[in-house]
Image (cartoon, rainbow, N blue to C red; front, top):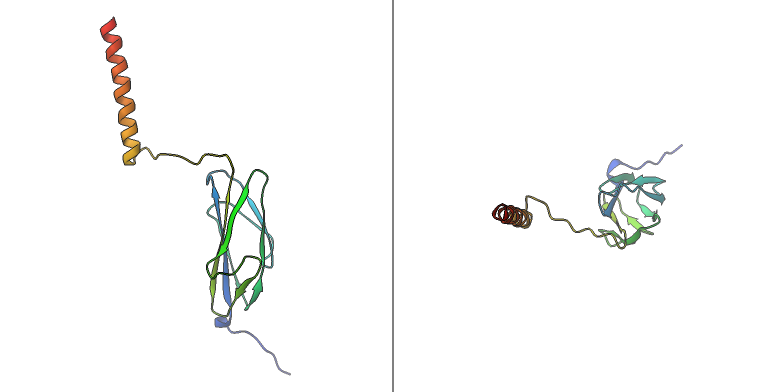
Length: 134
């Protein structure tokens, strides 16, 4: 009787990363395919250790969202991720909400501080103007 088995170095890994815009939406995205069924939110990921082969991962896009890109760093399409022994592949799914503005200025950035200073000067001018009218 003979038994064949793969050694640890004969496996590879596939990592699925979720990126969403806006990042703080709290939306959960569902995935299915050869890696099983799982859900990820912005910034989350799942890593699977697998034998060499071709694997498929699909995302169910929630209502109000669009899939902007789904790319793997080795050039494989997410519908046919070609994993070799010892290889580590990272696939990133990017989604956005059409019509949702993602513009923000951090308050402690140079631009944020300039805007804050201008607002304070405008408020001081209003206060000075009122005090001279009284």
